[in-house]
Image (cartoon, rainbow, N blue to C red):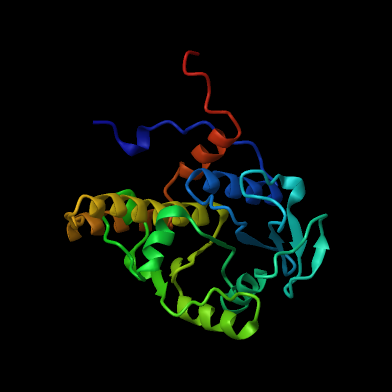
Length: 249
C-alpha cells in the first residue's frame, strides 16, 4: 500500500495576485452551481484594512482580475471601474465582528437554496459532504432578504455566529473562510451536501446518513490539515485556467 508520505506533489499553479484569486474563486464556484441569474457578493480582506470585492455589473463566470474592486471598511470605492454592490455592508459588518475572517461570499446556489426554503440543513451521506463539521453550520430562519440596512444586517451576522456556512431562509447562503482555498472548500462542501441529500430524498427515502465513526475520521483528517483538503483548490484553478492537460498527451 502506498503511504501518503511517498505520494508525489501535484502540478503547481501559477503565482496569483489577490485580485486573480478572487476572480478565480468566483469562476470556479460558478461551475459548482453558484450560478443563478443574480450577482452574488464576495470580500477578501487585505493588509491595511481594505477589502477586494466583486462588481455589481458582472456575473461570477465572467469576472476577471482587472474587474475586482478595492473598497474601504465602509464600502467606499478606492480602486476599480465598476459599482460596489450595496449589500456588501453585510460582509463588512461580518468582518467588523469577526476580525479574523479573511473571505466572505454570498450567493444562491441551486441545491443549498432549495434546503434554505425549508430552513433545514440536510444529513451527511458521503465523505465530501462531511468535510465541514456540523458545528460550523447555521440556519438563519428569520432572514428577510434585506442586506442594505444596518439593522437587518446586524441581526443576520449575530445569527451566523462562528459558522463557516449559513443557510439564509428562502434566499441562499453565506460562506466564510480563513483563506481563498478554505472558502472554496466550505462553499463546495455545502452545495455538495445539499445536492446529494436532495437526490437521496427525491428517491422517497431519507437514506442512511454516514455513521458517526466515519464522520469522526473525516474530522480528524481535516484537523491535521487545518481545515483544508490539500490540492482541491489548486485542482479547481488548473481546470479554470485550462491547465489540466491533454488527455492524449
